[in-house]
Each structure stands twice: as structure tokens, then as C-alpha cells.
Length: 77
Image (cartoon, rainbow, N blue to C red):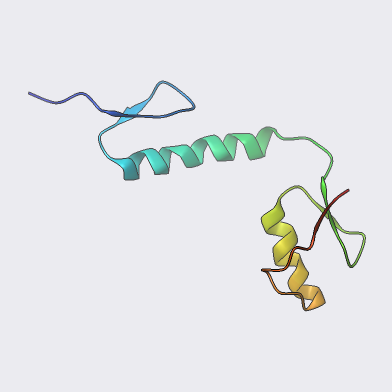
């Protein structure tokens, strides 16, 4: 007899037997959010006027200016 999945997704009704499957599934929710977000960029580079929706993209961009990824270079636009 098969056991019912015990690990439930916090975003929907799906459940999984393995945490790894849940983590894989959670990426689908992240993709859905990225596809439906139509907002103004909130993060602004402190060295130039470029703006970003995601902190990770801003931190990646800071390499252009020779900044360390660990510095606090985030400002709200």
C-alpha cells in the first residue's frame, strides 16, 4: 500500500513524498511570479541610474563598477 505524500506545498494544495520534489515544484511558483510581475523597478544602483526588480540582479550589476557582492549597495528607487 502506498503512503500519502506528507510534505505539502505552502503555495498550493500539492503534496510530495520528498523534500527535493517540493523544492523543484516551488520553482514553478517563482517562475509564475516572474512572468506576472509588471511593476516598476524598485532597486537603484548607487553608482549609476540603472534600476532593477531583483536584488540579485543589482548585486550582479555592481561588478561593472568593481564593487564587491557583499557590500550593501542597494537603495530604493
